[in-house]
Structures are given as structure tokens and as C-alpha cells.
Length: 422
Image (cartoon, rainbow, N blue to C red; front, side, top):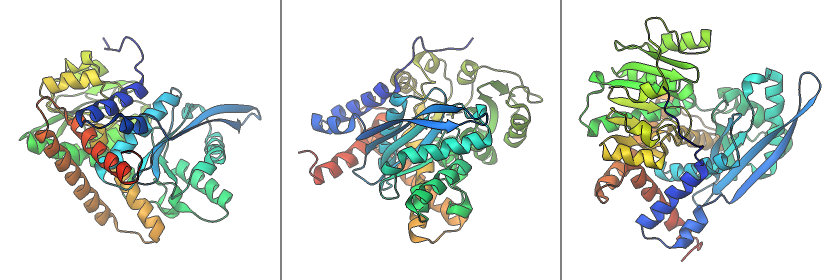
């Protein structure tokens, strides 16, 4: 039986609570919290799109720009039927802290459209993407706000959006979006960057836990881009992938699952369920599994206190944004589970987006080996900074709290220097 929260969790309130907690732990003035508790700007717009049948359908779109003290706003655009203003604002807050943890010169932003992209034809999807840019163009720009792919968006959608922005500007300005195709100034390795960064973070967590990845077992929740590549990289490192699930069900095999064959099965059938040699399992069963590592790579608020109490894994590497509730986080910490928080674990995407943005500005492009080496070094440095800071904090401080405190110190110092408080 699936374990579910009794009521919908407000992700925006969760994000604000994390900021409030970090401010209190660092004993900073309320002025700092007032600056960071909400976005600098939230744009909500109606996006009229001509459907293939000739009728007009209006979709709701959002862009939240949280804080730009360290640099231009930066964050993905997701297409999902359940997104709303609060979720978008929460994700923009996480992006601000993620960029500060990764030490890239960006602030936080996030975009979204309320839509199920599977219900649209390719042409309808293109018109929706272009109309979104038409509505948001005044607040976007390579020195202002730089979107990227997120849930249910990809390089092709970024290409349409970039092209529309360039038409409005009447000249090529590829640095306004990242996660683009290579022929439009994209960066090699960007498609796998979030998962690769998550893998590096999990690998470092295993090292401090004295675990040998070649002897570890892992489960992955979500089998989209991040979940698939995270499973693949762990598998290539010798880790046995014993369970995977998606929105339609799950696949379990204690002898191990082949990530590539599983991906092919999902492409053919629409789900990992029914993979040859596997048994079905629920999300609750996946989290309760006796394994060493769990990678949440789905949506927010998956690990509630009820779920956390069932977790037997020693490491959780958050490939998704906000998969653990604050109460769930406390339970995991009390159980001795090392949780690598989202703002650290999945920062590989924004790190490589930063590389893409730099290359677009210079119009000079690095080879893939150099990108991967730079990403690995950035992720190892970020993990080291946060883990050491965590060890220096008072007993009971979680890795997530340490990450937020570390990021907040950078943000608060930059805001003070610029005269925003104090």
C-alpha cells in the first residue's frame, strides 16, 4: 500500500521555512530573511495557443526571479499539469541557494507552464514554447535571466525558445537559454550533467561512509533523464541497481537491473513495469528496501516522516528538487542516514549550464572531456565544503541545514557588501 501525505504540502512554505531556519542558526538579522523569503519578481501570464483543430487554448505560465545578488537569475522551465505559483516560487528559492552552494555566479529563478505535454502535438508544443517566450521576453536575457530545461522540457524546446527570443531581439543571442542543442551553442555533456553531478555527490558520500560502490546496491525513484543516467553511472561504477520506478509502477530484481535495457523497455512500453525478470513494486516498497543507496529523481515531497521511518538505506542522493519534507529530513538524520541534499546533489545541471553560458559569451567551446573534468572538480569541491561545514556544526545539524547555512553566509555577505542590509 502506498504511503501518502494526508494533505498537500505547500512547497513554498517549506522553502521559506528552510531559509528562516538557516537565518536563525546563523543568528542573522530579520532583514536577511525579509530579502530572501520571497522572489524579487513573479510573472504570471496567460499564454494563448492555436491548437491543431484551429481553436485557441489559454495556458497559465510563470516565471519567478528570486534573488540576483550573486548574478543573473538562473533556473529551468518545467511543463507539468500540477505546477502553480507557489511551487514555482519555491523552486526559484532553491535555485538561489543551489547556485551559492555550487559557487557559480548566478541567482535563482524558475519557470513553469501548467500543461501535460503528452496531450499536445509537436506543433502545438512548439507554438506553446514560442508564445511563452513572447510573454516573458522583457524579463529574460543573458545578463538578466537565463532559463534551462526542467521536468518535461528538453533541448528541442530550448531551441524553439531561443529562436523566438532571437527573433524578438533581431540578432542571435544564444546565451539567453542553456541546455540547447549543440548546433545552437549547447554544451557537450549538458544532457547528463544533473545525473552525473548526483553520481559524483553519491560517490563522495559513499567515500565518507566507507562504502565501496562496487559492493553497494541502489534504488532509483523516477526514470526520466536524471533517474536513468544516475542509474547508469552508478551501474558503470559497479553498483547493483535493484529497483527502479516511474509514474506507472516499478521494477525490482535483487540480482540487478540493466539500466540501458530497462530504458529501452520503458521507451517501448511507456513504463519500467513489466521489465523481463523483474517483480512489480510500489514507491513505498522502494523506499523501504534493504539497499545502500536511494536516489529520488522524481518530484517534491516524496519522503515524508512516514516514508523516512521505513528507509533502510545508508545514503540518499537527491537527484530531484525538494524530495524530502523537513519532518522527513529530521527522521532520516536521527536514523543516521547521510542525505546529500538537492541543492548540492543535483547542482551538476546548473554548473554545466554555467559552462554553456560562459562558452556562449566567449564563442569558444571546450571538449567534452574538459567539461566532465571541470564538473567533477566542482562537485567534489562543493561536497567537501558542505560536508566539512556540516561536521563543524552543532550536533544534530543535518547536511541540508549545513548546505543552506553555507549558502546563506555567501548570500548575506554579498547583500551586505552591496548595502542591501546592515
